[in-house]
Image (cartoon, rainbow, N blue to C red; front, side, top):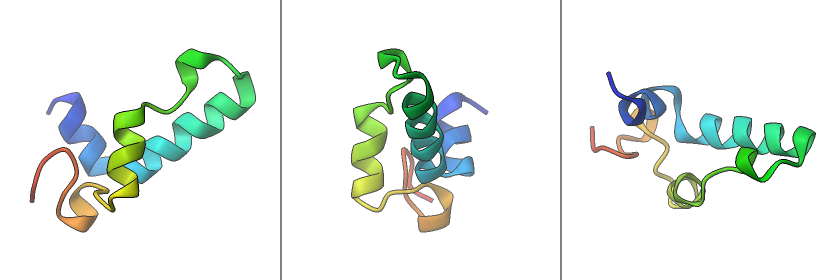
Length: 57
């Protein structure tokens, strides 16, 4: 399993939330949520739980 499939399994909303919480704590730009993930979450593409994320299920 690669990193994109793993993110879909965990849930892109969870990945985005973790990155945002980390960024809020550190203020480090490298910890900011990636815009591609934030965009997918905004489109409702959360991974396996919605049937679509990086991949379609």
